[in-house]
Amino acid sequence: MKVGYTMMCEQAGPRQLVDDVVAAESAGFDFAVISDHYFPWLDAQGHSPYAWSVLGAAAWATSTIPLMTYVTCPTFRYHPAVVAQKAATMQLLSQGRFTLGLGAGENLNEHIVGDGWPAVDVRHAMLREAVQIIRELWAGGYVNFEGEHFEVRSAKIWDLPETLPELGIAVSGAQSTALAGELADAMIAVEPDPELGRYFDAAGGGGKPRIGQIAVAYDTDPKAALSRAHEQFRWFAGGWKVNSELTGPSGFDAASQFVGEEDIEEQIPCGADAVAVVEGVRKFADAGFTHVAIVQIGGDHQQPFIDWAEKELLDALRAM
Image (cartoon, rainbow, N blue to C red; front, side, top):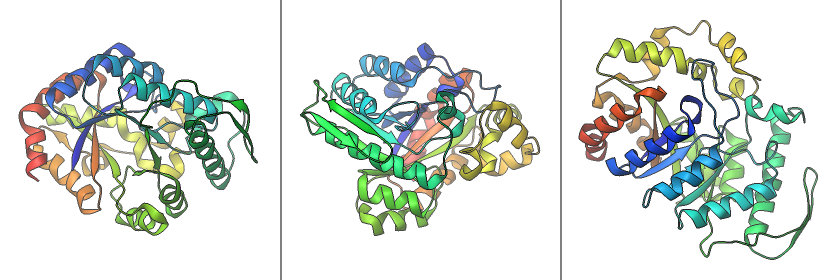
C-alpha cells in the first residue's frame, strides 16, 4: 500500500501547505493529495486558500512526490473546460506527477456561484458530462460540445503533456462507483467499505487503484490531540449524505453540536500510538484499497506529525 500526506487547505495557509508537502516528500511519503475548498468545514479550522495555486507552487518546490486533487468539483465553481486546462498545466509543471481527482461536490463550496444545488442524480449526470469534456480536450484539437448541462464552443488546450494525468472519481455509493468504474482510472473514497470496491469492479474498475483517506490527531499529549480533533474535525460525523448538502461552517457547527469527544475517540486515532493508526489503515487495506492519504488534524501540528511519521509511523505502516 502507498501511504500519502494530505495538504488540507481548510486548516493552513498557502505558504505553509507548500512547506509541509516539501517536508512530507523528504520524510518519505509516497504521494500527496490536496483538498479543494472555498470554505473550511468549521470556523475553528480557519483557512481555505485556492488549491490550484498551492498545487502549482508545490509542483515547483518538490521533485518526486506525486500530487493529486482530493477532490475537485468540475461542475459549478469551475467549468470542466477550465479544469481540463488546469490539470494539463499541472501535469507539465510537475513533470508527470499529477492525478486529477474529481467529485460531484459539496454545497458548502459550490453554492457561491448561485446556480442552486440540484439532486444527486443531476450532479452525477453533470459529472459524467464534465469527464467527457475533459477527456475530449485532453485528446487534442478543437472541441465543440453541447450536452444537457454544459456547452463548449471551439475550445482547445494548447499546452498538453505527452503523458496525460490519471483521472480519479470520488465515490460514496452504488451510483457514483458505477460512474467511476466506467469513466475513471482510479476510485477515491473516505470510508473503508469493501462494497464500494465490488461496485467499482462490476462497472469496469477491476485492477485499478483505490485511494482512501484517514484522519489522525498526532500529539504526545493524547488529551490535547482529542480536544483538537473534536474542535476541528467533528464535522465528519454527519456522513456524506448530510455533508454534501450543508451550505456553510455555521451549518456544520450546528449539525455537529451533539458530537462528543467520545464519538471522536471511536473514529480518529488521537495521540502518539502508531499501532492505532496502523489498525485504521489496515481497514482500508482489507477493503482492497491500494493507497491511503493521512490527514493530520491541526494546521500548526504538521511538522511534529511529519517528524513522527518519518521516525516511526511510515515504517510501522509498511511493516503492516
